[in-house]
Length: 261
Length: 253
View 1 (cartoon, rainbow over the protein chains, first blue to last red):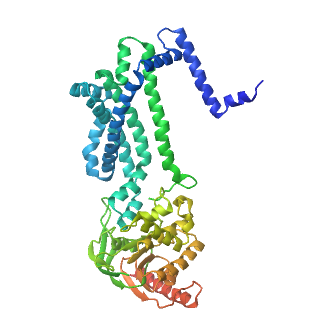
View 2: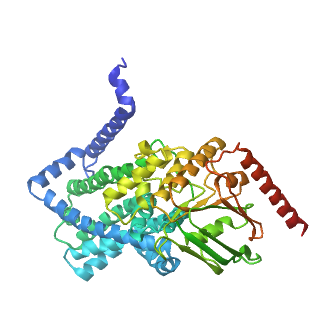
View 3: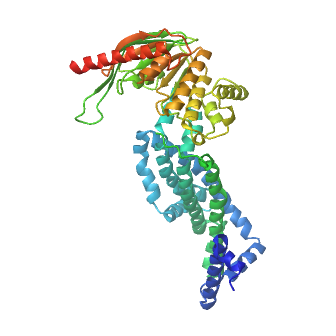
């Protein structure tokens, strides 16, 4: 009999939870069948043990602190450089090749260079994160700065609105969609860069712990830390970026999108 | 109130690509306006009216000649600008759009001033709304309130009602007459609509498509005027006749 529980399972929210549950069950079955594939229960079990040993939270916080510091700098640099490139063609010509190099150079090369330059310190993960993530933000904000409506700029100039206010009230909001899109990529790239530096040459952080368990051949631990790294990104994206975007898009609720140029 | 002096203003737009010719938008424009006057620039599309307005506002610069705007304090004239489209920041509320252009006062004084002018154009209750939630006429009213709120010596208006439907435009014209009388601003109004110019102005500069001033016509009718007033209708007909004459001369030469 298909009762109300069945309707809940196949409708909207229910369907999503059902899909996750099915994926977990399949994962558990595959993990049970093959020795080298960790199961969800073993992975969670490892994380509980790691937390009890006092290694989970402190190492995660170290990585988060490094990433937080670096991404704050990335946000300021990425917006300012991207804006300058979009506004002044000379700056664009000067920096566009450098930005391309920054994007094209793989993160693990940055990571190895950082370890060789700065050794086991906080400097390497932070600087490598900045090098790796800033170009991602610049390419987007650069497009955003070019998309600032020229009619609104002319209006602001005719009223002699101070440059700082123009930047905060006109330029930044018109770049917002691009900033959020670019910062999402920057967070992915920057977080990966921090973890890589920790993996290659550090004695603290999530990346260091993953490397430690890789050396000892612990599948459950490796996937456990992988899970933590993934959850960090998901929480940041849903809890921070989505909210910022929703808050910014309030003006569109019940109104048409302004298309004047 | 302001004193506006244009001396031999010429504007030539250089060709943007090879094979094109330079475009002469304005050719030796000279006039002077002073005091509580509503001056209209009337002419066909492409005769350089908006270019002249942009030069007066400082957004654009003349190729030759000069424009001087002298306000209450010499060299520091305040200029309000009402555009064809309202040009409001779509992500800011109506009140924030007003505050965007205000300066030189405390925040509380700015709030009081913004609300006073929103009240003047009948939009006091819409201050928390976003521009996209307002009708075209209401958006243009915000544009007018914004321009008036800076207490301008000179108010520039570039075909502000051309994008609106006839009924809304008629209401706003009546409202503009009332607002102009309530302020001390010198108004420079650009339009291609002779009826609108006669209804609002007390001086009219006819521009030809060659970018020159063809005729300077004073309009000495009392305000407020209505489209159906006999004198207004007669003057409109006379000026339209002058335009036909000018067009005829342009096409035969």
